[in-house]
Length: 519
Image (cartoon, rainbow, N blue to C red; front, side):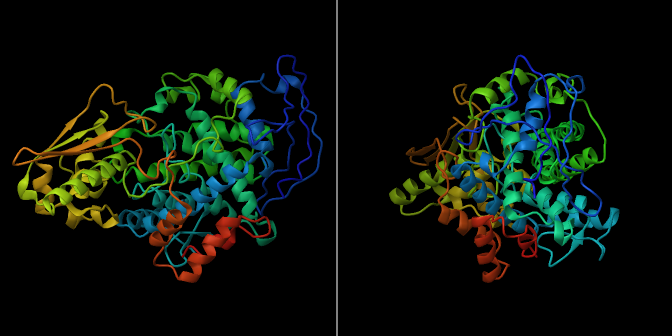
């Protein structure tokens, strides 16, 4: 369906050519083609040639480049490597969203949805993990996106963001509302998902500041909404102008402060990005327009990053493909907590093994001191967390839990475990050391966990790259194992079917075949 666009934008450009050959899955583009609008009853694509005057479009800049790229993007642009990686991301985020839907916080969000909008029999978009509850397209994207981030179990990229949660729920909600005759295929969802991920990765590369653990604004609420808008525009078959305006509208919905990390508000950052990216694409389809140069202005998308440099990114995009999934894998998490905690947990596990081997076991009574050498970052330095969401963002809590239990699971963050006395005793012994040479960057940080016993023996382990990191990715078997653990309330048949559907993402299967299984 998305391949029938035939409209050609004709511009006389002397300094840059718009016609670039697609080579080796690179982020390159060909001449743009336009499609028909998104009608109320579903998608229709008309064949029409539109001659666009040069004066009606901005000169070549980042906004124009990305709008063209979103509109032109197809399965041919996705390398075999990127297809495999993105399918793993899709399976993982479905599982993470499903287990997230069973949390107390997700139930509170659904109560909100019921209060402000209600769940009616005429609604078509599925609310994951609820046994068939339906909502409006926007509310479903909102609630499912929030469920994906409810346990901080969702994937992470570099520069740092959680890319999948704002994108897949939006695409699935949009697919759910379309009539059967206009249903997108799973291959079309795969294409839209990939462009949503790529746009986020591209925009993060406009800022060197974004390469560190964020301290001011939460990235999924900034680039996530842009990725959602790009993905939904692609699924709707938008022409470059509508893609440009969808991005501009989405920018007005972007932003959330890091101060809400470790609170029950943080998961909403992913949910609102899924929702408002979807709404931005539909608003653009209905003729709402934003600034044509939204990605190129300090007062546009540049407002979110102090060192924003769109020209730097445009130079990268036109010469290399280093910002796409083909060249960098994703971090799929083993533990339901902030990614930085994975360094601490792996290091603590290593230290615990030494203690058990040397002392025959681990006892709180013989531990005198615990030190954690970690990057300096205030929002993940929480000495005595009192809630599960604070605990998921605490070097101290995750380290002591791993030392005490030899594992970290979803149950680790249950309220009954947070307040247990042996754990509190260990937390009282912890000191955090933040050396200047340990940058707060997921790409090159390290965490050391040391334990000193009452007889002044010291046991220490360092993690420079936890299992699940993009340079040390989970095996396919472990991705599937995580998915099955997260969806254990589904039948084996439903689990197997979901694994099969996502492994293929076939052009012969409708997107709703996945939605129908997410009860």
